[in-house]
Length: 161
Image (cartoon, rainbow, N blue to C red; front, side):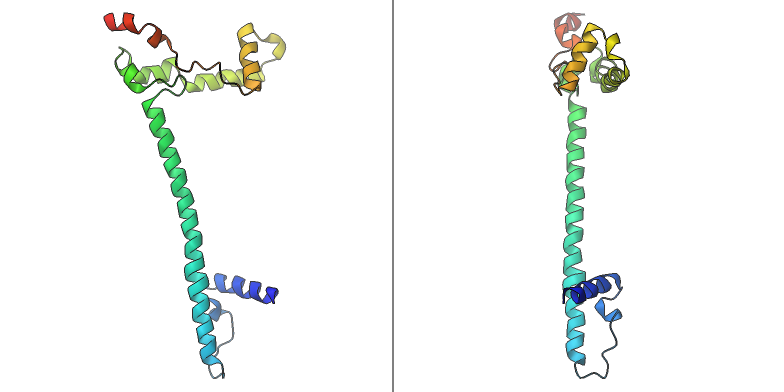
């Protein structure tokens, strides 16, 4: 019985017009009206409702991913990824937020440094490289200057000049 159900489900979903395309024509049969009812109910329940639910789940999942991406993009545009200081702080400074995120705290530089440590022989590490590599191996991100940057340290001097 299960094999019959699976075959009809498989054949009915693959057929363009539902299960009626795969079965013999019911015309002239005593159960013609029952067969028509079966074809229509299969089309309605399987093709229309079940596939609409599946499409809805897929669309909803992609919508959620899009919302997460927009949220991450908005956060990157409003604060520095490395130090997590807001854009408004840097916009009061002479060089601004754009220079800070592309020159001073360019995240790619941090990634390149970590990749450099992965590829470099451990016997050739400096003291700072050993410290960062140990933190990296332990998944401890304290070596990122969260909440700190040179511009913030010298904020008063920069605003006076």
